Length: 117
Image 1 (cartoon, rainbow, N blue to C red):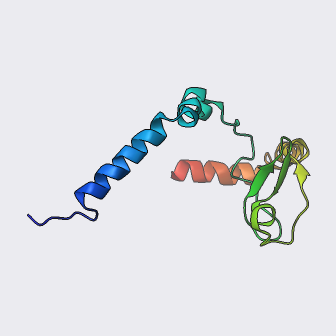
Image 2: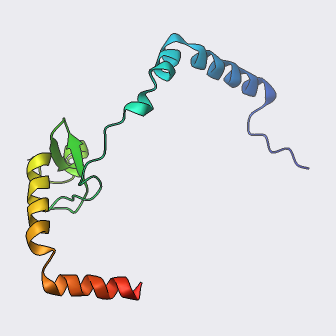
Image 3: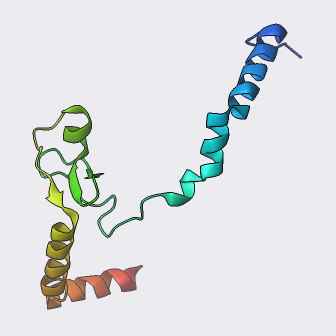
């Protein structure tokens, strides 16, 4: 069988020792003990669904209560720099669903698609 090593044994041992030292460092240990992954922000009604009206990119949470175009916010690739309060946008969506979703033609289309599936 061919030797598929990319690094020689000495380099491999030094890298393994360095990774062990990093993992044992106080900062690394504190991060693991904090269990930060258990404190993720909760998903919201429009998580991964709301998109920018200018470029179509997803809206990102900015601060606690605002959504903004992720492209504009992170790297300036969109001109839409206006944020919207999450609660205001969610209220608009809920009201639209209340008044428009139960229209007879939409209900009929849903039933037809449901039965076909």
